[in-house]
Length: 269
Ligand code: ASP
Image (cartoon, rainbow, N blue to C red; front, side, top):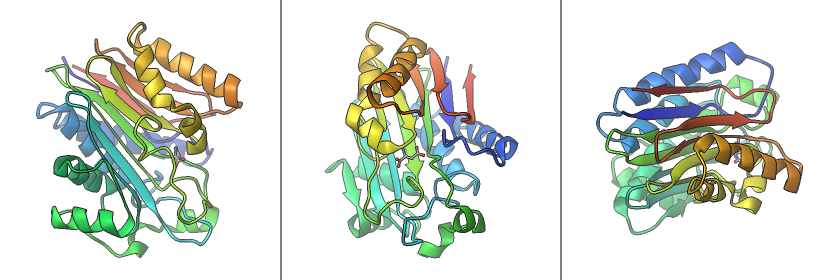
């Protein structure tokens, strides 16, 4: 029995909701197609697909900085051996989640930024591109609110994995790094407990180290209850909203959001 749950961001913008849901559904298919390989392969494939969806804030279609540039963050984690890889502030990698995977596979470090991240990724065969590749008319015109993408999977060996990719919050200062590439803040996975990833204004998830907290809670409750508790804490402690998806060690899946909308999808089988 395997599980996959993913989201296309809790930014809550009114526009294009059916299209954003359809984009997430396509990513579910892309991830599910390789879940037989591993949970890690599934989350990478699902997030990679969402990086190609111009209506989602990751890869093509990413939010712009205050200067009108694009700086992308991505991460991936394997809950079996607690291996993790992330990149922040990359501008010329076609698929930031592939770069995060290259950092994980390399194994020396957990987080690389900017040009150093691009160099390691390119040496590992990740495609580079022109920074202009990611800008879409929609983002240039609207500077839309946050809409990170993320995926959590459990394969039939009980291995958990999580991956996240984002352009970050719209209008961010150049150099700003959010929760998405920070272990424990925007993502976490541990086969012995569960796995989770987050979307919303990253500074809030960073203050609460919320994904790690939610995963620790799964020692004594299922994914559904752990996410309710995490969303309650986000609200009561910081007055903030957001969204999360998770899978517990028994394969229980959950998606919770306190913004008006978060496209998400799940499959089990
Ligand atoms: N969490 C992301 C960030 O702060 C944004 C989002 O979830 O949409 O960079």
